[in-house]
Image (cartoon, rainbow, N blue to C red; front, top):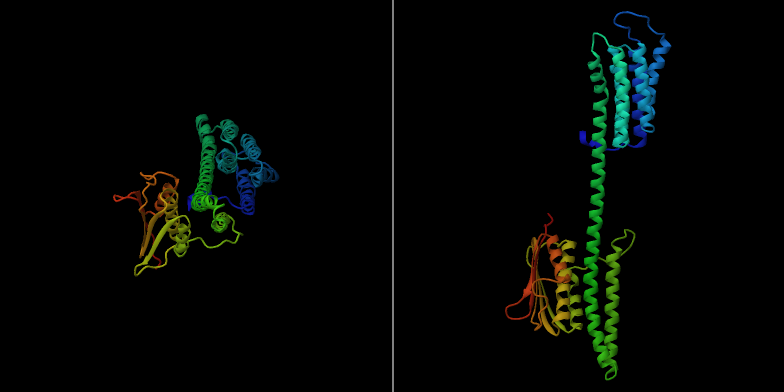
Length: 385
């Protein structure tokens, strides 16, 4: 609770109320009370209006201490010094103006730079210290007067400096969290765009090569290839709009792809010359898979199949997705003769590994002993109660 109060910034109306209460408390109560005190060894008491005026001069500036912190601190310290030297406020009642000085110095330390606040605190300390030295009595010596003045000023400045540093640290941490969230969002968008573009461009390149090869010999086949390119391109544009639309709260976009869209993905892979045998198994009692896990599974299968299209087509590919209570297991294998990227390198495999790591799962990718390539992943998730 204390940390919250020290670091929380009050609203302007709350700050104005606090300052007004402090000004009334110091200027209307503590200041006149201290000024009306009689000297210990007798003496002439000043008129009542002088005591009230001194109290107002000590307290009322606190109402604007946040707007002009240095000026308020110097004015209050100067008034307190004059009042102590002239005896309007007896030296034994110096704690009352000390409160006003401490509040003003605290405000300087919170709002001004360290160099400026230290200079202001040193000036206030000098004013009050000289005043207390001039009022040397049996209560303290000259050294004691300086120490008393330091007790008025130094703790207030130190507390204000600590609050300023804590607020600055909280602000830096907030900025760091914002930058980290922005970086993670950029990484997510880049990963999504990579998966969408890499998959669709691979299919487009394959069909474009077919169309170019049979353009003169078989115009119908070329036309069919061009229609596939058009359909694939439109699908890619829809996916890109979905990814970018998620960045805007006011943009309507289709739900993110998941396990239900895997059959469509398998049919698209067939266009690129890869026969994908898809097997999605739901083992009881398997609950609803979170949307983020479903998207990760879809992108992993998409990237694995895309690698087969790019590096091993024509080939047979088997994609098995097993959904259990608490995890989803993915296995994509092919019998292609050309190796994909052995060793688990490449942007696609890195993206798949990052998706699995994001969910705290396990990922493996590499050549199979009998030929071809295998990608396996395990993505755990929390089952809703």
